[in-house]
Length: 339
Ligand code: SAH
Image (cartoon, rainbow, N blue to C red; front, side):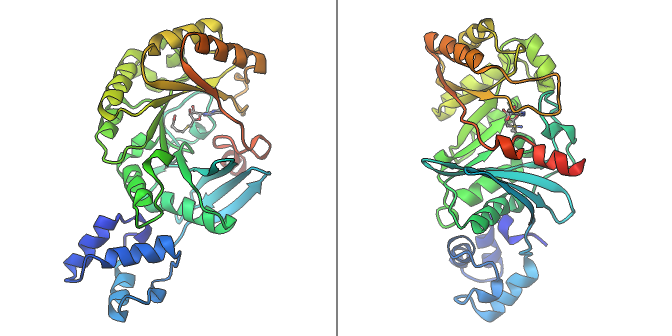
């Protein structure tokens, strides 16, 4: 039985039409779920009893569960348990401009980035759209707050789960639903090139972020095995084509690993690769994990890297840090529980 929270409005419309009912019922359902936040079909009072009974027979409305929660002043990290007892994480961050959530897209990850904690668990399965939608609904209910932006940067490679992730985006972007604007949704990928081309054709113009992390193939091959399949020139071509199709600025993420990828030479090469392209670089202070071979670059080193990019006319920011004290970084909470 499909879960109701994984249904786009068009799909619910098609469902009602197939039952000989009216299309607008889908809007009613969306209003109950996403505007009134009433999750019990029995309480959908503007929908006839017999239609509600059918809905209950045809759709599951069960939720994933908040298993654990950790907080500091500006960050709340959730560990969720899924129906098959798998575990995933989401992190809510309070900014001065609003509240954002970082959601997971898979249980585990197959990309194998050497420095990343999430990849220690190989992919066990893709998340369904409803499991991503519910990360948002549960966090909002728990905090009594509305979330204004969504980043798909938690556990998993979202473009390796293209179908469910794009469905998730349609559901949360729907104006009759949670209504998170396309410009407030960001998808981060390690660089699955064919899927970047597919995403360029997707109807909703979200923000794309690419985890780049190294300007030389030799180094990137070592850090990110995906680079052996889609090398830097191929990836940059895909980004350039994406920019041309969408006219949307792309974010280049660059995690600062002490003495690995943080030299001035790396900064210059990075600038050279992206010269003249409509991108900006987001430098990410590395969250130290159990991968002891990696440590974070010093503040001065990050600043030098930043200044070099600036002087090369590359737009650059340094990511504000959240949740360092509560293991909010990249698979750490889950990692700890599993141990
Ligand atoms: N698979 C996607 C999204 C999940 S990772 C991707 O690769 O983009 C989200 C971002 O966090 C990526 O840029 C990833 O490289 C980075 N990251 C992973 N582990 C990290 C760590 N310990 N500290 C800082 N950033 C990390």
